[in-house]
Length: 296
Image 1 (cartoon, rainbow, N blue to C red):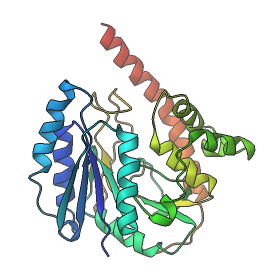
Image 2 (cartoon, one colour; image 1 turned 30 degrees about the horizontal axis):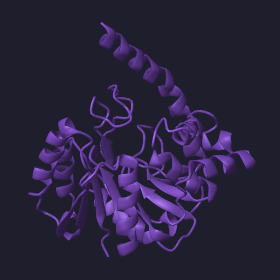
Image 3 (cartoon, rainbow, N blue to C red; image 1 turned 180 degrees about the vertical axis):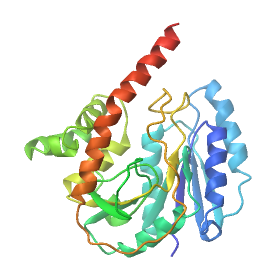
Image 4 (tube, rainbow, N blue to C red; image 1 turned 30 degrees about the vertical axis):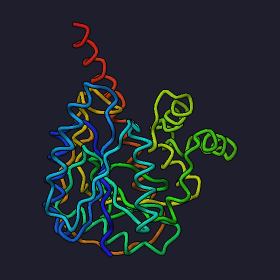
């Protein structure tokens, strides 16, 4: 069965149109059922853009079926995703998940559905991920411990292990002394992100999903070249509002997938660590430049 697609939208009509148009160009689009969760507006200003998005998604064609869910109140991105993914996975047993700033390659749905079928019975596999950083020399597909959030798919058996209580995750990381490993050898501070979530400084579902899979010693499959381009690093982004191009990739136009051995790719892990360390000063510099520009 072709997996249902779950798309989360809010108040970015231009982004949403790009995402939907790219998704419609996918080979399996006409065979896929699309579920769109439109979050409610925070205020009257947001309502204008929310209604514009809703007017657009009400006209979407090109899929097997389009199902729209207009939320009456503002859930926020995190709660909207957790609720929406849970709803669809309970019905279908699996799902492909997108947000309104993720442009897909025409082969994205092929990649996702093929791998969701290949690894469905392998309980060590948490999810399938479609984005990968602009890193050269990676294998065609590979596994890393944990889970990810930019164009992904999973099954009910994995999503049932998602722990929404960040404090429980934090305590387990500390008790097993896993902070350094979960932070990719301290090259990316996921534990700080989790701490901020616990303290209410962010409401990231993604860090909890990643660490939930990590603590269950589960792996996520990545492509050697990305099937996703994130266009959300602008003033409209939920969690990041300073433009950066460090995550830009050339979309994968090929499709050559076969099942691989289910074990973590330690070479790819080292490449991720190197990439995280490389972009740190770049991101800090760009944020400082953005702040200087705003003050001026």
